Image (tube, rainbow, N blue to C red; front, side, top):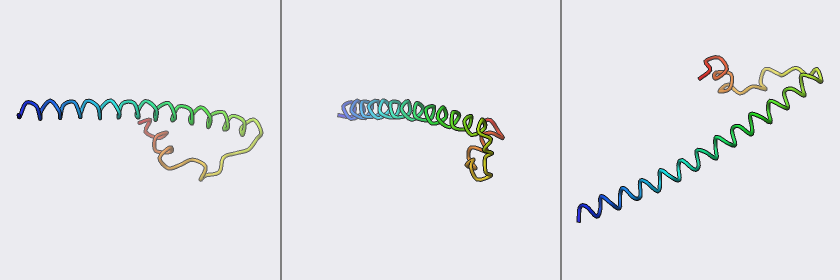
Length: 69
């Protein structure tokens, strides 16, 4: 009985881990797409001579730029 419960638990954890990995891959792809899009928009703004406003960059992004982490 205990072995059956352990197997069921392991199978559930494996399924959930797979779902989390799939979701994580999707989120990373979406993040790359947003980054690509923002990079293109910033390049267009720079070519048009439009400077960024101080509030244009989110604090989390500023922190990442400062620490590269």
